[in-house]
Length: 157
Image 1 (cartoon, rainbow, N blue to C red):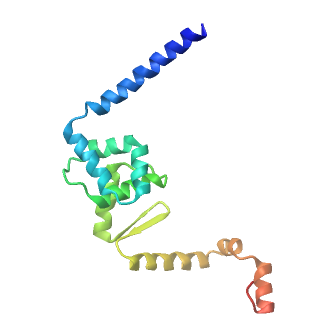
Image 2: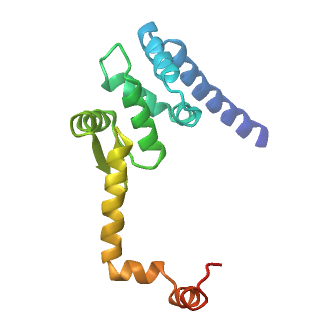
Image 3: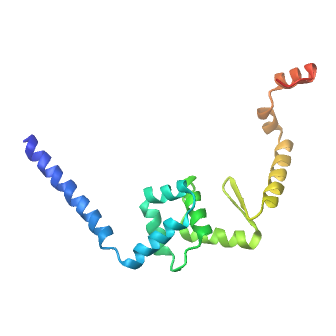
């Protein structure tokens, strides 16, 4: 019985493998070229690896974008956001990219994405100022005993 079960399982596995092979082997040339273009566009190996390990994301890009020329910034932003756990669609990413072009920055979750470092510096400064005003944040951030020790001994260890 054990050999018969193994044969059934082996046949099921081979059938599934054949379906996947057929899917990629029978892909039209335009789709193959678009996938190659998407992967060659990415310079960051971590982002490229993410897309290779998540073929559904590449499929989403191919299906949802009709552009023959791939926008490197959009693909990079899409890959990075998804890699960081922000489950983002390619359509949303395109909208984010357009907003960045329009406003020079965008805030997505805990991230501020900016065209220039100057905007990031301004945002960071505002965030620090807000946190300094927040008493509970300061209490968590500063150990009162260490602060007293620093003040008394006039040294930082």
